[in-house]
Every structure is written in structure tokens, then in C-alpha cells.
Length: 234
Image (cartoon, rainbow, N blue to C red):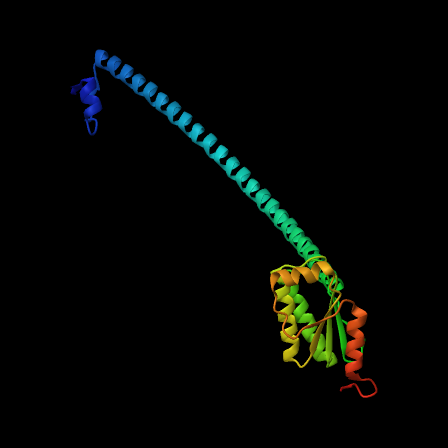
């Protein structure tokens, strides 16, 4: 019956039949097995620690992902509320701007009314400064009124104007020419001495634009030139 050493015992692919270990070798094999068991236990403890750490990490990651999803949803809802408030505020501001523009149009219309004082006679009172924008609006409203009423005379009344400059005088001439193209005669009334002196100083060519000191005089002139019963000009 062969005797095996501890090393031969562990290296053997299979234990020979009838093989035995000596007492010394059997003791060495015993402690070798104990060592392997300890190492195995240590490895198991190590991998258990690794598994526990990974499990904890996965749980923390899952919790983080859940919190992140919750934060994203809260952010989405906050963005939706903000966008809704922005839309509401935009609509509110747009409505206010429209009202302001409508008020401004009303104010401009009140400051530049075209008044039909008689059949085929219009009066456009001009008050305050006459800039390019206001002059354009005046001309548009005046020409529309001329076409609608088929007026023969338009009186541009400057009673409410304290002073004129070259730009104002140019606007007056343009309005007169535009009305003339529609077959309407423009009359200028309400010239104060200061305005008259300013027009002379500016050397403004008023052309055939007739001027009168008072509105009443301009209206009397227009009425005399009209055939009152038929509305035809003489």
C-alpha cells in the first residue's frame, strides 16, 4: 500500500487505491486544509463585502434616479406654470397696448377733427405742433373727408397755432396741393400776427392758398362762392 506525501496528495488527479498518508503527512494535510478553509472564508467575506457595497450603491443610485425624475417633473411643472404666466402677462400687456393705441388714435382724432360746417365746406382746426407724423394723419383724414363729402372748400384753421416753422409751413402747402388734386380749394384762417410774420420771415411760398385772419371770414368767402340752393360753385 503506497504512502503519499501531503504535496502528492493535493497534486494527484485521483487518489491511488489503497494509498495512505503517514501520520506526519496527515497532520500537514490537515493544516493545509484548514488554511484553505480560512482563505476561502476570507474570500467569501471579501466578496460579501463587495456585494453589500454594490447593493448599497445600486440602492443609492436608484434613489438618486427617483429623486432626479421627481426633480425633473417638478421643474417641468414649474416651467409650464411660468410659461402660462408669461402668456397671460403677454396677453394682458398686448391688450393694454391696444387700448393705449386706441386711446392715442382717439386723442389724435380729437385734436385733428375734420368738421363739415356746411354742404361742401369742411374745416380742419389745427392745434399745437404739426410734425411729420401728425401731418400725415391729418392729410389722410382730410382727403378721406373730401372724397366722402365731395367738398368744394376746406378751411385750414390755425387759430390754435402759436408759431410755425419751415416744416409746418411745408406740411400746410402739401395738404393744400393734395386737396387741390381732388378738386377742392384750401383756405387758410386764424393767422395771428406772429404766425404771419413767421411765414414772411421763412419766405414760404403759399402759392394760391388764400389766407384770412379769422375763421368766420374764410367761411363767409366760401359761402359766397357757393350756390347755396344747389351746392354748385359760381
